[in-house]
Image (cartoon, rainbow, N blue to C red; front, top):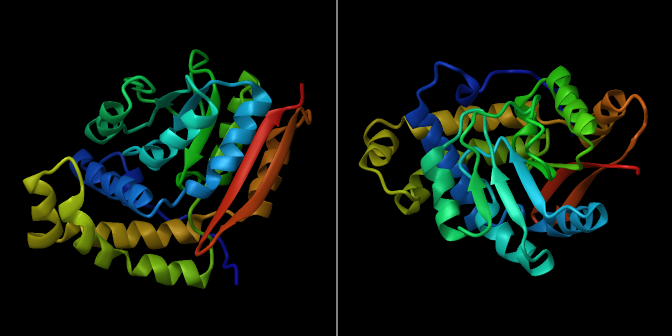
Length: 260
């Protein structure tokens, strides 16, 4: 059952939040995305829109610590040889993103500038993607993100890994357990990560709060499609919003591409 959406706050969104803790949280999300292949089901959607639009570069928005790119890039390169991926964020986790650059130096580049998802510079061209980040933005900001892509005539693909329901609320409530179990395997290795996980357990508590809030802030596919139609006043884009059924993982997504 879908619950009412609530625009609560997440710690990692706050300007005053220590970058060290934010990086530890996004490192965890990157590790989980790769370890459990959370976004493997998005490959057909990404391949299709890349082929249909003729794009050979992806501009990932709100990349955090790198999200799913460890697992997605090898598969995407099979379909789009020569693909380039540019990782961007308003608060970039440089050490985490460099882990991906090190693994795929010919494919991945990290944008050094702080990039606002609502005002992506025109020199960043290519398919715009967002993974596990749209819920951070209020409806007005979401429409600004979409308008910015429309103004640049760039395709866009947005994916979440949760839905706004009781099932996902329960799943995310268990996240501190996974933080405790998985932290020793997260790279880059840092003593401070262990301290703030086990001796002073801030990271499990922060992931718990932000995880629950993420569920409560997540948009339904109908809400995403409605915002897209409101942003695209001239009806110049073809929009699609569905839930990808990938076994135990359900991925709500929105894609848009120019009609021309």
